[in-house]
Image (cartoon, rainbow, N blue to C red; front, side, top):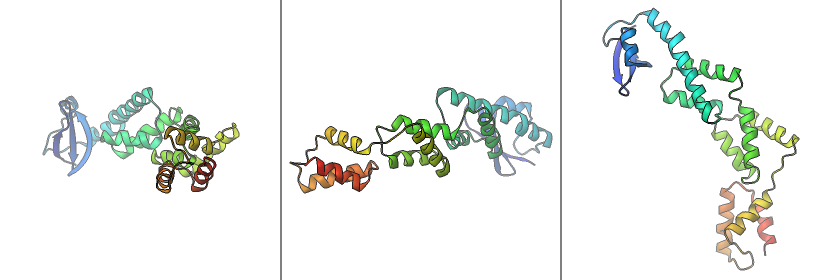
Length: 204
């Protein structure tokens, strides 16, 4: 293989291209240590050392540092590593490593998220949020089940009433246009049309 390009990413790091493709990011000191020079051949031994020792260790540490400040889903953590231009195989190994210690757990993340938002967001909105964070539909269903087994229950009618109060909505004085506007607002929040109608009807 050959080093076809070295591109500066920051004052301390560079992108290294092997055979025209981005291979990895190295610190400038590592470029010297591994004798990475543009237009020159790159040894198989150096490549293996970087891919099997240097980058895996760095990616694991990156994961650990990220997880010290907050929880991540598997997908979010992978996306963070991709932003750092880690190769996919390194990303998989690093995420598997932290998952083996239960530092990341999508089921736990989903259940905690449901619990944190059970009295603020509709079930549909919570599901949209979690799916957007990379939680699979299967894990999402498991999380709901576990949450419900612990006594969890979403009262969407109460949430709708609170939002109506916050918006100073009065069903008795509101005209058709105001009601339609409120319907649209609540639908965007993920509440069902039937639940919205029921609550608004009872405000008349």
